[in-house]
Image 1 (cartoon, one colour):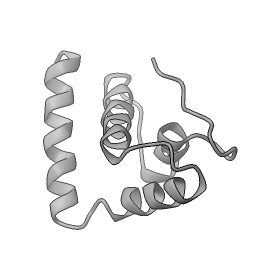
Image 2: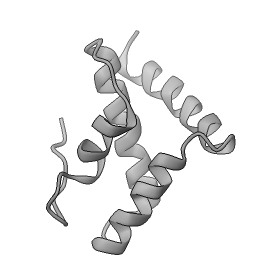
Image 3: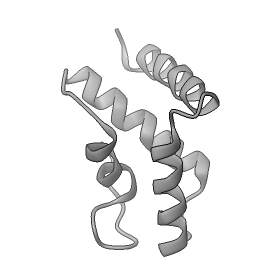
Image 4: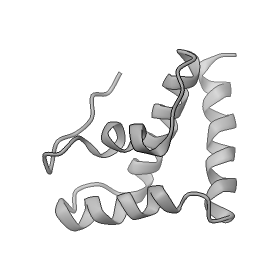
Length: 85
């Protein structure tokens, strides 16, 4: 499956998860990040979430919220952006 098709599929899954409350971990992390930094829109954060999941799926790597949060919002240092690949 190519990156775009996989990205669209992941985007639909993210939207469904958001509508059913299963994306609370992401929304909470986003609010914390905004309170610390205030420099990331929700839309940009969702794009980072989608891209992080797609990268892991394409590499056949497992993922969970705990290992996605640093990639999406940066590690411990406020204002640090995750690497874009």
